[in-house]
Length: 227
Image 1: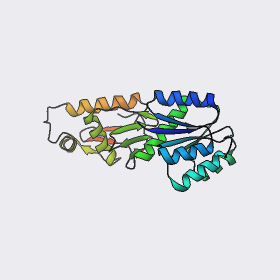
Image 2 (image 1 turned 60 degrees about the vertical axis):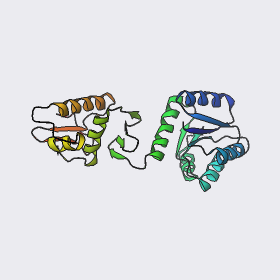
Image 3 (image 1 turned 90 degrees about the vertical axis):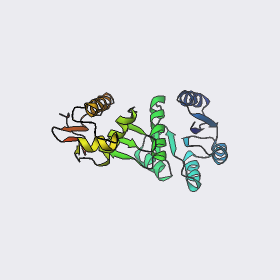
Image 4 (image 1 turned 135 degrees about the vertical axis):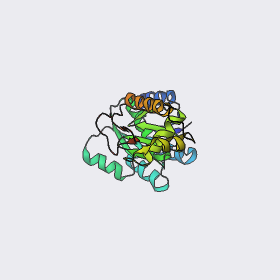
């Protein structure tokens, strides 16, 4: 379980955020002041900090600066101020992202998941908004996870390793299945069709390209509907 440190003095907001995060499978530590948050950050070593700016003792920006001075924990700031200068200042103080109040809990959860993916996925293959994390064996289109079977994942991993390159059928079969599947086999075609359907369901249109008589490729950028 990932541990989230929530530094928020408003008990009602804290309860709503804590409920949302716990339902998503996170462990939540709650601090009601900046100093308490700094102590819990040092003792608990959270995976991410959700930090309110309007704290009763220390300004949230100062808390972010102190955390960033000793640690690279992702910091997501909650702020009631929508001014561009304030947002730029927050990022300069060490925040990784910010969310303007009032916000929807689902948006907060999505932004947290993005920050955690970036922190964990030091190795990532990206083509447009499509991201593949080899070590974690996960694929995302934007903020939506695309759940693939093992072979579908290996197939997409191979194609995304060289965007734009057309991989011949035999090469794909040997690298994904470990051997040629035979001229009459439709196993590869079925897996490509399933992969394409799952990408479309996630909103990722036009990424897979079929080159008739040659093989398959991932477009270097988001293209038109594939043929």
